[in-house]
Amino acid sequence: MKVLVADKFEKSGLDRLAEIGCEVDFRPDLKDDALVEAIRQSQAELLVVRSTKVKAPMLDAGRLALIVRAGAGYDNIDVAGASARGIYVANCPGKNSVAVAELAFGLIIALDRRIPDNVADLRAGTWNKKEYSKAAGLHGKTLGVLGFGNIGQEMARRAQAFGMHLAIWSEMGVETDRSGLPIDMPLLVRLRPSSGFPVDPFAHVCETPEEVAERCDILSVHLALNDRTRGLVGANILNRLKPGAFFVNTARGEIVDYQALEAAVRERHLRVALDVYATEPSTPTGEFRDPLLELPNVYGTHHIGASTEQAQEAIAGEVVRIVKTYVETGRVLNVVNLSRQTPSSHVLVVRHKDEPGVLATVFDALRDANVNVQETENIVFVGATAAIARINVDGEPGADLIRRMRAANPCILDVHLVRLSAPAASYQLARSLSNW
Image (cartoon, rainbow, N blue to C red; front, side, top):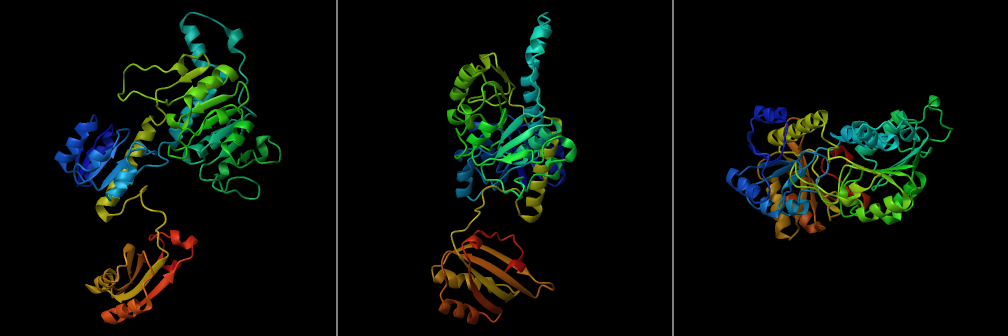
């Protein structure tokens, strides 16, 4: 199977792709028209990218079946276009979470202790212990976390180690137990008697991002970029922060209204650390200017949150795992563009002998009745004599149609219709047959 890697990628990953039998075409500098042409010429079935944008012309250029984003976010890929063309899109969630959290906390410490300014003055020959002894410290402060996925939870672990409180909000909601603590938060960040905190949990789950801003001393953004989060952090949130509060963004520049942030820095004296920006260079090196970075209370890094050797090796390993599974089984791990809920609320359950043409009989009958098959799964019993198929359809097959199916082929043992309740309509075919 041909794999086109059109971005930076670890050599260990390239070697392992070759070991599993892939024909690897590694061209890390491809983009735009050059990438379109490479896809056309190579006829690659799999495309691996990091930050390279994948647009409609690339999707139409060759015979792509799977695009793997070597990272967590996938906003650089035209997912809707891929879905319309039947192309899988997969990502590598959680593999760079530690790296991003480490940078975010490094920036928080840098803001508190003004480390870059310390270094700059010393290099310029200036000793100013009086000025740089004014840090407030992090212990006992409240860290506000917008987004409680893999990275947000890594931030929570580190917040406890620093003796901080937490105020969290998740775009998808956070289910909590009776104590108000997130159920999915690891035991590591549950209150410990030795922590010195009061009886109340150190983590507060907030209803809105605005509530997080009102509660916290430091606000850190860890949301994925999508239509709901684009521009989410604007003046309505930033103006609820305490004067002099810290603001950190290591997620995506487009999530934050940077004009509103600039105003908040000037008017509310926020201290800000950024790893991502409203606009960034398209090349690894070059000139870059941003008005925010010219303000004295703003520190910046070069969009390097995920850029540790540990993270890149982990991501390479996950890409190999995704590709290997696809090559060997046809299944796609971490797929992001399969429907979570099919439009239908009807499923045909067909028990049948495991013989050629049995399901074809069922599909022909459905076609003749103008009933569309949307999803199907066929599971074979031990001994490979009989099987059972679940067929999700876009309409309700009538009783006469079901009777005709039963009578059409002696290998069809039974056909019955399941009318799904509304919650059950979002079932996934990967669920065990025993759920029925």
